[in-house]
Image (cartoon, rainbow, N blue to C red):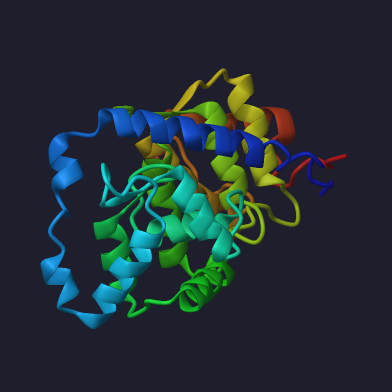
Length: 265
């Protein structure tokens, strides 16, 4: 198998941050008064020492305490992740977002933050960082952690009111989730992720819906167990895009019906 493209991750930091900021502004505009006032009375949470500590930590990172007392937006999220030593373009940021149930890129709600960390009995930044790092290390082997982070990423990346991800954004997150230190989607004979990302633009796919997003992970896991694709057949219930991907592989990458991949330069 050949080397990965050297620029595989080059565009992720700048592009992801730009989209993060745009998504945050759009989400703020779409908020209802009910959402803004939902957690204005934290009396119940204050009764629990751990939750009280988490509320205090949350308060330190709010961007606009007066108008949005129960939200952390892009600036506060960037500051918090910076103090946790988690890069925005690292899969650790996605793990953190899953733990606190971030509703969109760069945004954290009080409920999600307090409930998420209280559930794992953590209320300090060092322990938060340690848990993120533990789950980061477990991504390649722990399917439950991988599935949770992967599925939440789709929700996280959606623009307000949207049901699909633009292909460009889906590709960025697939690169984060399907390359080390996350799930390395390749086998000794096949650069699966490279082929997937080569195929989609060629097919002129413009958007990725929730079903295709979720089934791509299932397909990736199947290919890691069975590189020959013998698990696939015409009666399988895969999305049509994946069916076409299999046919493309057989025609473009494995002509002649062989199970082994062609040599990749």
